[in-house]
Image (tube, rainbow, N blue to C red):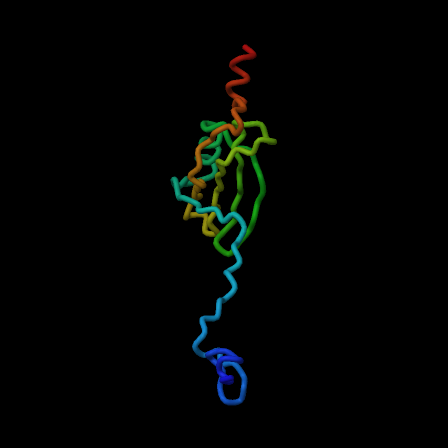
Length: 129
């Protein structure tokens, strides 16, 4: 019997297989958690403008706050759907370190849509009246 047939086609004279010609599969890259793609919506000039924006929209509830080298980010969740149903719409305000840069408004681009046919809170209030 031929030694190459016993050890495999890629065996060299020493009897060890050579991996030079084989395609070695690399492990798949680890997927990060649900990475959100934030979309810039608008720039607010000052805190008063931010307060007006929040009062006019009436659909965001505080979620959490993070400080980074870019600035302070305050995250909000949509409050149009009951909290346990988790509306996919999210927003964050980016307070730039230099106050003259204003405040950036970013969204994740997802629409506020109730899951599992659950009515939004606004629809429930209208029914109650």
